[in-house]
Amino acid sequence: MLLLKISLDHSLDKGRTVKQEFSTLTDEKEIAKFFQDCGGEDVVRSYFKLVEWWENLSENWQNKILHAPFRFVQENLWLNLSKLSFEGLKQWYDDVTQRSQKNSQKNGSETLSPTIWNKVVSKILPSPKRIKRVLKLHQPVAEEDFNVLLHQKNYNFTPESLEEFIAQVREGVSEQPIVTESLFPFLKDRGLNPNLILSERDRAKLAERQRDELQQQVKQLIQEKQEQQEEICQLKLQNEEQQTEIDQLKQQNTNILEQMKEFRQFMESSKSAA
Image (cartoon, rainbow, N blue to C red; front, side):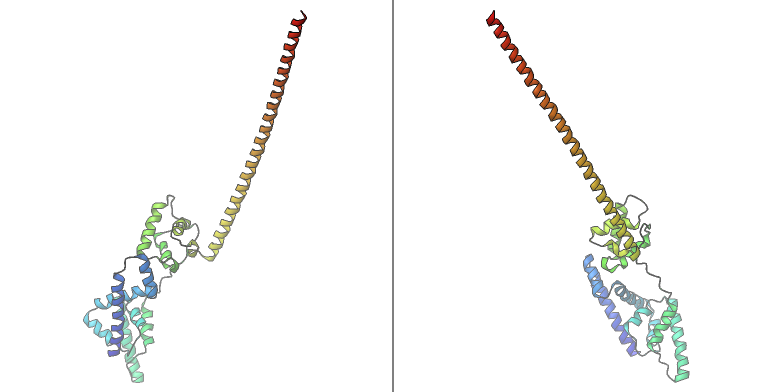
């Protein structure tokens, strides 16, 4: 019992310390760094759960657990045990008690190995739900799909900052439904790489699509430039034709002036002869 209590008290002290330090944080970057320094958000919240679980147990059940047939267990085993519901805890206690009795009859010792502790917990706990870590291109994004961003460690989202992000996306996206690609501009605005929430296959598809779009843009620019060149050539041709017309008009005007000059000279010479 003493060694069990020592290991439990150590885990509870650590959990309370972590909880107290976390309660003082308000900045998202500080919270993200805190999670990282403590081994991840899941670890931190496991300690929160341990403290809450133990404090909610009755004194009777606390005594039962501290008198369980084990000499000493590591911290992670306490964290795992705290994941059980109360019904699961009773099932665990009955199971290890029966194993202890059988072990006593067989080997003369009631003490069980710590592996039995975890083996029974694992048997009672429901199979962990598979964590979704990627989204598919063109896929409508449901409420639970946003958790993919929470599980992407390089994004450093907290539940609070994720809620803000979701609200930003819903407000900023006019087309419905919201699909995976709808998230990309909002992720880029935060300096985050959207490729991290895609599978390798979809990353390749996206890269190919972006390459095709870029090639199409280049073709469009080339076509527009050619059209501009053709327009410039047409303007130059029109300018040359207009210049030719101007030159012709100038020549015609010069001819008319010469003719008028000759006519005046003829009239003057006719008056002199008369």
